Length: 335
Image 1 (cartoon, helix red, strand yellow):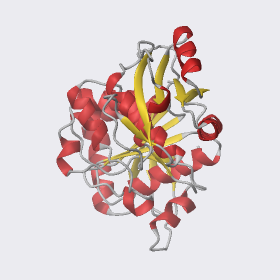
Image 2: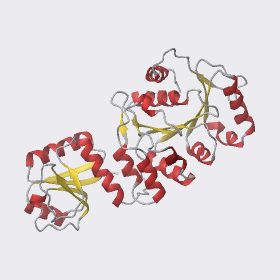
Image 3: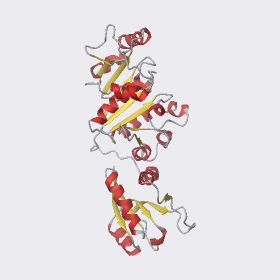
Image 4: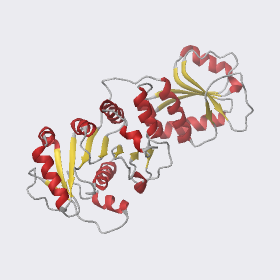
């Protein structure tokens, strides 16, 4: 979704700077128009409709907001309070990415989800194992790094009960719990909210979510919530890589059903290999997903009686630095 954004400010230099930075760095998200006078603002609003407008109080005299779905005040911290307009405020003179995130967060609450069939969907990869500790996260991130290095937009989504995302990425942004809350409330535009809170690692260029605020936030999601979350994310990227818990409940089964491909990970331990054997031989879900499943033998493992003709073997990386592990493995995931 690309928003039509109007910036209306009598500070022409600042408005042009903001417009330029948004157009250069976020052209896939917003289409920006600028005006710097009350008369020009009225003229634009007679002829056009806008999804969002960032408006300075100084040029709002007599302005009709009918053609603006979401009018926001562009507000500097040192400005005196003005009760003439009861609009949400967006901070001025902040990082452009911060301003855009705030705009998207506000817009997500007032807009409706688009169900357009024209939206291209990402390829969805589910990374799962019936055993814990086999290296699902490093495999998922290795795949994400590989796809990103080939110029693709990648979203890595960790759905483990206790996320390991902070080990690999900066997590000071807004929590994914905000998305969970919107899904549970079944109102607002989840895709836009996701755009507002997604973080991007400057080195790998992988997009990701910050951890939930609370353990129960993830556990309260329904199967339908999970489906909506995946659908919303898949419309925003080329590759969606889901790092799953080793639990095989209804939500996990829905993810595996929705995925275009599944990486089924094991290692050399007898526990992991035995659980893999049980899943592939006793659970009818494997029969449904077998044709799109790739077995990953991690940590130098050899799979005894592999349930598929081809197994991707990944080496054991001897290092205590988790990021080095996935970056090294990314060169070994050759599909």
